[in-house]
Image 1: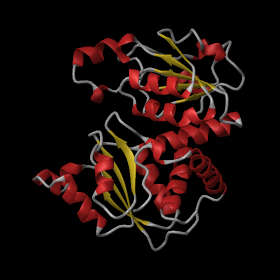
Image 2: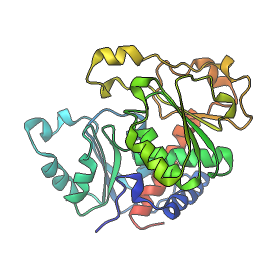
Image 3: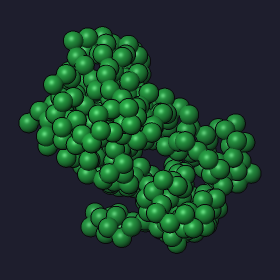
Image 4: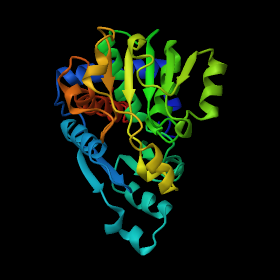
Length: 301
């Protein structure tokens, strides 16, 4: 069976650190023609800009060719083709599949019906493991370590797949978490139970300003309209937090602000000019990390 990356739990602590090391090598040498005989499928059943372009650029920089689609409406899926048939068809042409899908569990299902490795590029509100890996790479790069950090997760902690995956991955490194969210978007109980079982501490608050001065990594998220079934619920919380430069006067020197992007109103433009903003470099880091993941799953690193 091929090695897949569907959940962040598919990588051990050793593998996570190995991906970080490979990504560092790729950042130093951005183009390595090691996959010139491989074809990568990027099949995106829901809209994406950063993730799709990051994967396609990563594959190109490794020398691979890329096929796929960015809109399922222009494929046979619009004619009623099943996910199983689409995956099996694509498998005939490629060496590895990158899939993004709005339904939780779709990536896992895809991995069960194809003989080639599958990378989950996001499935509903479930997991986004490559985003987690680039987050870990960014944390390590900015802090010089992964252990014993205070990580403040802000915004949509209920539906935000990026925070769910990051929480699980960072559990290897003895963090302290701060959960900043409105009552309607609190971290689900299952993840808090996970932390309790791991002996990892966390603090919950509704106030963005309350713990900024004790935070190492401030992980901002947007409130995702597409995850809400009730438009009224979304309207009640969509602008609940807004980080502005004036709020950063007493923060730690090592603080870095991360965001999976796109941002809407949750980070003011004046934060971009502070030494704490790291989200655009974080997005660039995604290319190196995805190069590392593709090369690793295909057995080249």
